[in-house]
Length: 368
Image (cartoon, rainbow, N blue to C red; front, top):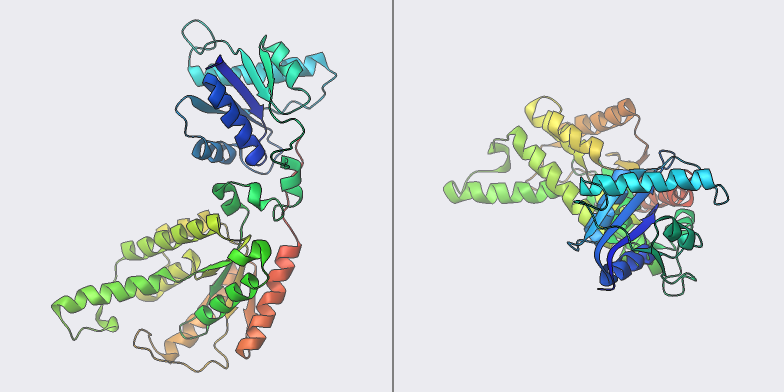
């Protein structure tokens, strides 16, 4: 190793391949590396999230990711402002070691790794060597500003966790036999056909259906004549279904395109909990609150013949559930549309609304 203690400082708003190259370069050259994530409270991606992303991407045992709130304005010509920034960075270093830098704590910083013009001055203030890492961005032509401006174009430079965060998630919900799965598949195929970054557009099937099939198969080992309506349900099962469905979503968002189509979600699972157990599920509702969905598409039952495939309640229940979905979407103020008519008409309506969502782009607050 060339240096004992390397320092990397950045906003990582959000982190991208250039940042990862910078940290990996420092990790290869140093016995210890401290990465200070310096975020202001004005920025719209939480500091804790950026820290978690970097820790996932850089699990090297000698690399420590340290979050620091830095609400000092940026003025490279002001000695006082420089001093305030450096004081915030040093506070982060002290918090990381528990003892400060030097003595019993971390060894003094002897190298500052940076791709920025301010790198030499930052290194001077730490009495350390400056190690420039690809200042012209030749290897990874990307920046945080570019990512915030156009996350779709910059997606190849983002880690799976950041991709998942920046994926637009569209959820299809509706009563049984109202065409949600058919439309989900069609939407994923439509956007995949656009090619390029959209070629990997995926859809997440309803995990609850798979769970029901497995539950019935287990019950039939004891009684071959048991049917879906004979099964007893517990609240914990609905929580499990919602958890696993959300995990499937998160996995798909990491590897797919900037758009993810979801056949149902925790919101719908909570309504089915109400249907079978008499009330919404607090645990499933918490999962719904944690999820990040952008648009709900409610499939109307009008014009869709009810098909009893052996798994469904019945047509009268279908109509009640359809009305319940609309009532709850309105009550919660969730952004949604209702699609009706033929399959082609439903697809056209949904694509128009999703295109509008994508055209709005992604909004980030300006950094200091």
